[in-house]
Image 1 (cartoon, rainbow, N blue to C red):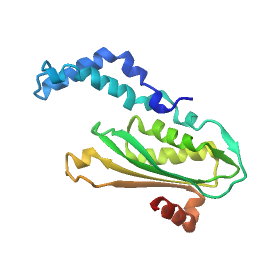
Image 2 (image 1 turned 90 degrees about the vertical axis):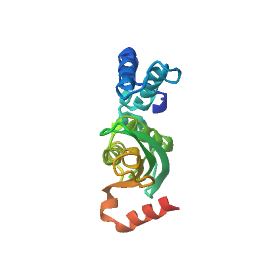
Image 3 (image 1 turned 90 degrees about the horizontal axis):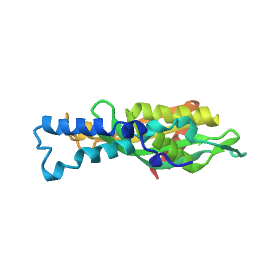
Length: 197
């Protein structure tokens, strides 16, 4: 199965001319000359970009984890520093950062690359960071039925850094805790310690 980055949003493709027209209108409405050389191809470029950055709409994130494997490993598994890029649904401005996923299997494991694919499927759409965090934890819990799941997402939001309060470099950190991680402070501490290394 191809990674989400290989998916293109077919709704964007199907509406290419309309989207290009509206991007051109936006350029005019903000005071630009849409006929100047540097902007001639901008509507087409933006449309192609939308096909890619909104590719997550083409896949059900629950399907991305695919096949699980029976494995008698019931200790912590972590995939950390998964880089993501998303779009804030409030301002349609980018936000990006890293996702750290930990789970304690209960007889089933997933391929490690599937974690990155899950992140891609969830983030390549209009989103909020809090929802990304919860969706990843819930989908992994549903698909693998582990003893516990913990997800930490770090994000830098251009809607906060480049506009509004204009605080560049500020980061938002969200977490979701499921199963044994809720009841076991030592397990949470181990996860948090390992993702900091």
